Amino acid sequence: MNPPKYQTLELKPQGEHVLLVSLNRPEALNALNTQMGRDQLDLWTRVTADPGQLRCVVLTGSGERAFCAGGDLKERDGMTPAEWQAQHEIFERAFVALVECPLPVIAAVNGHAFGGGLEMALCCDFIYAVPQARFAQSEVRLGIMPGGMGTQNLPRAVGERRAKELILTARPFSAAEGLEWGLVNRICEPAKLLEESLATAQAIAENGPLAVRQAKKSIHYGLQMDLATGYRYEIEAYNRLVDTDDRREGVRAFNEKRKPDFKGR
Picture 1 (spheres, rainbow, N blue to C red):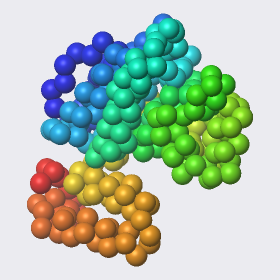
Picture 2: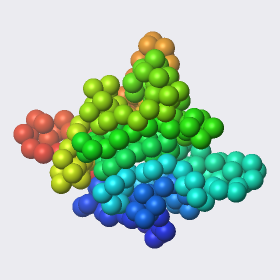
Picture 3: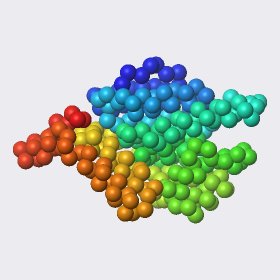
Picture 4: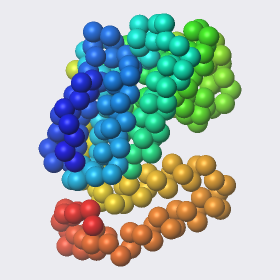
């Protein structure tokens, strides 16, 4: 993968297989504007179409105050309904491209994640957060509602009834509450957030890349099916791994008591 230089995203490769992506509008609390929507759509599309040697991504925010404050309301001020919907179409495509990215994406939430910022984190595979991070689906306070999969991903993370309470009240909640409810996987001290997130990304990257992608896909789509159909989908994903060099290398390395050298083929 050889992406262009983005206006609103900072990309830092971490070795051969891990990429650190930072939302890079700290002066606006990394708020999601039209350009960030375009940049993310391009990035996640490229990662999906041609990942190259990339095996895992960590997504975080620049600065210490916010992961992402949500949609940029200053840019939206005065938009016509048609302009608003045209902008949101870009956001919709970016969210779908992120949630359907075949590579694991870890959200390293370094500060507040409100509205579309929380939705962005929820589109990632799991979330690590600093203790002082606060979260909210705050859209109803603006006379709108979540439109970045928030009404879908939040109930899947915390359950229907709690999600209804959080979305309908727009009440902020803490990282500790998110951890208790299953939305946050781990709370990390600020100085350790990226270190721990990248360590997990590296652990994922050391596993068979084809196996990781197939397992992620099976979980993601299987949860949208009944158990028996989901299991059949799992077996289809499983069988695609049997006749691969990585499967043969994994078994060979186990028997030879050495670390496998996976090539993604």
